[in-house]
Length: 123
Image 1: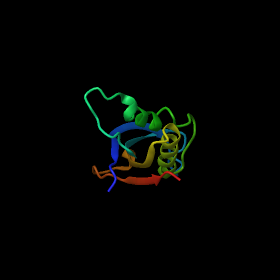
Image 2: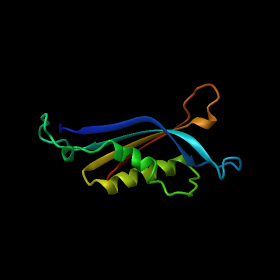
Image 3: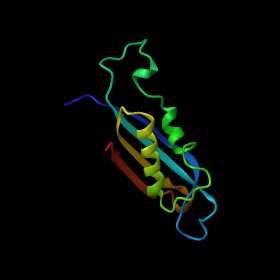
Image 4: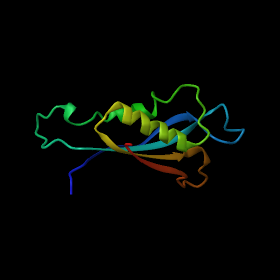
């Protein structure tokens, strides 16, 4: 079995233009997003291993905030997740798998977590 490294950013919130209903159109909705990326690890990590041997975690948050096209309305949160995956694949060729979990906070009535998880492998 080959070694793998999974970097994660979990449960951060951001507002995204998304939704299918007329009351959702034109206003951003709060989403809770978690991202995990898999890449091949370095042979060994020592106390002085540079960041270039891994990946900056902030790149994951960037893909779900700043990299989303401003003013674009995503009908489905699946499209938001897909855009995040593609952004991360373009950022770093070492990434082999991306998993994005999105919870729509605005539709929760009793604290339930309603959303999707999309996992994409590099093609």
